[in-house]
Image 1 (cartoon, rainbow, N blue to C red):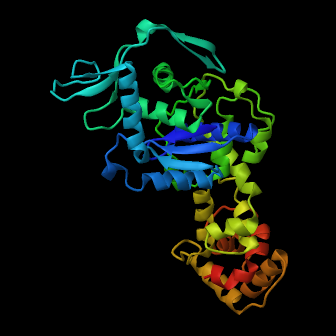
Image 2: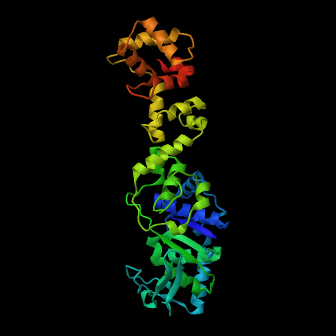
Image 3: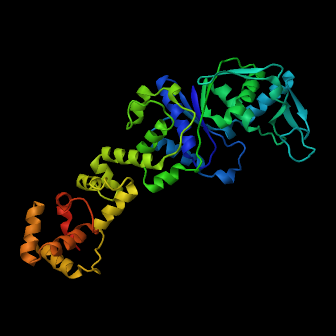
Length: 394
């Protein structure tokens, strides 16, 4: 089984990348995938609703779980296991003489004794990893209030759940020997393999922030899978496609977040969206509006940018400009005109009725139909908005 463990806080791109990689490998191995909310050491009021947000985000990215639970549900289990280690003689009751406690207190803690041998584990990318016994000192596993430390809780949960492969941030690598030692002290002998990946998020970019900017889930997922991947067989793909070819050994130990590449990938996935579904983002249920939005993908790369173009077409027009007179003339003609199929016939009809020629016709018509002085070809736009022409040209 594989797992994704997350603090109940706003999910960032680094955390989501870990979730995606664990899920992909679980699918490849036809193994179960567990989601764990690490809430045991966090104030309840500080995390209200964050766990639900995490699950909603995973759902948006089509990351399905077989089991989900909160560490706070297992408090009695952690206490029982801590006392088992104590009874065995591998732990002791101590006061505030350990490095983890910054202030002196009369409170007591349960601490595990330092190991008597080197801690050895297997990292799929780095190979055999040896932590000399003198690098691990006594450390606390259960606090005076009966709550476990995060390292002890994590080790216990992985043991109970039968997690046999852990893919996580390299910044957590120093936890691994201690977690292995805790499991050994609990007589857990099942082999667990690890992968510690380079996983930087220097700009602290959250998934909510990307959604707010108009990036879509398929594109973000696509980008995060490519991030640091050495030889992808294709650049634009879906999650099911990635599951077919993804290889953990192709993950590199460096990368740089590139917003321009994410924008490009987002544009490519927007092109793939069903036209009717895309139109719903803008308040329609009409494939023509989806097609209309895609006309702007040469200049726009996010939903927000597309929405601004669609709004410009359908919002009331600004007649306070140098073409105000001509726009009023054209508006009046359109309001009384029959439905005209082609743009050339439509433009010719207005030319004849208005007497306007050249730029005096094209410029005000452009602004009236799009709300902008520049746009894709009016002939392409007209075919998609002609059924809304009375609403548009006003």
